[in-house]
Image (cartoon, rainbow, N blue to C red; front, side, top):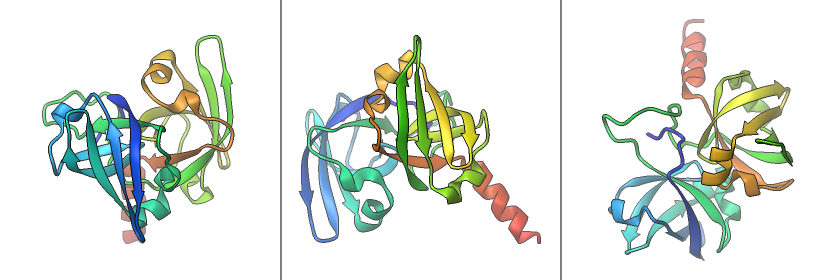
Amino acid sequence: MFTGLVEDRGVVISIQRLAESAEIEIRTALASQIKAGDSISVNGTCLTARAISADSFIADVMVQTLRLTSLADIAVGDQVNLELALLSGSRMGGHIVQGHVDGVAVVEENSNGEKWNKVVIRIPEKLAKYIVNQGSIAVDGVSLTVGEIYGDLVTLWLIPETLAKTNLGSKVLGSKLNIEVDVLAKYIERLMKASE
């Protein structure tokens, strides 16, 4: 489990594409805190560290993950948002994020404001029902508050802290972003269907 509060921007230093998977190596200042088997959120996707060096870790990305997330398009040199799994007793500053990506959104606008960036993303239509104004959403693993939602368009306002600590400020028109909607909304939907 994660909180959506990014701890580091890692850099992809190698990718080995296999028939139905990929192996990625990411350089990060967090490497000394990672051990083999740890869960790490990489752009909002929960991956398992397989090998660790002094300044990097390697994770396998399976075919299902490649099919469902933006990690299929990742390239050497890309910056990725990283968060280590939540420790018991830690502050819960963001919201509950599982690292289970629900879909991929596309950036429709990223404009600079005086003190923030306005980012508009187009989400998969099937996810719109789980998103509400001023609700929580994880975008590339970053816990954000929804500004506005119009159909499948979601407006987000990125404050300077978010721009400084994540890769979201560098996204351009057409960039793909991993989206995880609030898990509580999905549980409520499931419970309501079960009681029908």
